[in-house]
Length: 294
View 1 (cartoon, rainbow, N blue to C red):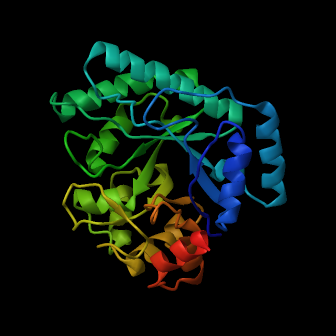
View 2: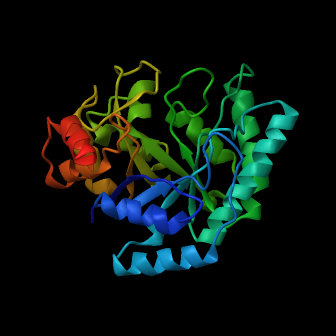
């Protein structure tokens, strides 16, 4: 079964119910959201009533809450050696895990972090130590996102991801979120995705893949830029992205679009249509603008 969706909003007055309604308007059967702004610590109290209504609606539309994912805010950096920033990241990630538990979401995606000049080995050690403090306190599964490799990012290749997983005690609570744009920008050739999956299998971490971010890239393979492009409009291309989505080895894994808005409008309704029909829409951007303006 195709599990396709996108990043959606999580607003104070509608919360999970509003996120679901937005996803349904795009024709999605899964989605991803932040429980607050991704750039700061502002968080509204969670409404049990709205969460319950959302879950009732999910059942009506045959959406499995286990396919829904939360993304942690960017301000969390578990690789940072600064004591105050490091302790803040651990504390805040624990809070985010708790919010996931309250809502009933069991998958939380994080950027592994940036070592800010300390070196990969130290950054990885810091991440491992942080996860070994966090994971015993929660039922939430934490998914490490593969990164593009800009700056001092940790997680720019599978070997670094594996080192983190190997160092974690509660391995049943750790997973991976692949990002097609990040993989390409970090130097992986995503045009033959089975080779990438074979690499993960060789490292014995393929079973850890629990989510995939489906994004085209504005830059060439290996650029280490991390700039997303709309579906089929970038250097990865429509065919390669479709092949990732419909790869049999990834059949039951939720795929989430994080492609850029077009003149302030979400493209996801039209991108999901392209994906379902397996047909490239050369007028995507015009269609999005016309739909929301008219």
